[in-house]
Image (tube, rainbow, N blue to C red):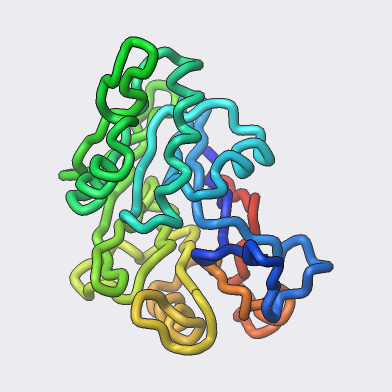
Length: 256
């Protein structure tokens, strides 16, 4: 099983659409960051986490030719507005794609992208099926079911969902606070992929200091910082990090 970080940039990406790189060196390819999406790929299924506005290019670059299901972290545009790019997999497989969401994201997606979920006509049928998250989720690998545990975390004034895959990897792309009662789920991880927007404080995201505090607390074998703003140059950030922590980059792949 592989976990692929399709995009690791903050809401405007790096560079921004006006070409602004901020403090990032444009000569380093690892500073080219599309918006956050990730992929769980087994021998049997391919599950997507979030549909960033850059999804089409992410799938092409990583040669992803099928999507079996989608897990959403939250309702914000930088995690949802690539949803139309899922339509091709409905056409290819001739069946609706299951989409798993919390209550707020369910409401937002249905109101904003209603055409994806209802039969509009014979020529434009529903391509996706909304499913509410109430318990653990799964992906298939051969005859096995691999558990995906959803944990709600705070993301500013809304909730976001962290996904813990097979008790080995936690993906927390957007978070400002994790309740102490959930700390037990983050112990003994092989990988912790964690929000780290920039150096200063932010009401909806962790900054570098807070990210490193959680990493020190949870003690994963390896931590990867994601949702990186243009303030954070890859090489400069990497020099500041402990040995078991690295910045993410688009296409970074780990084996589970």
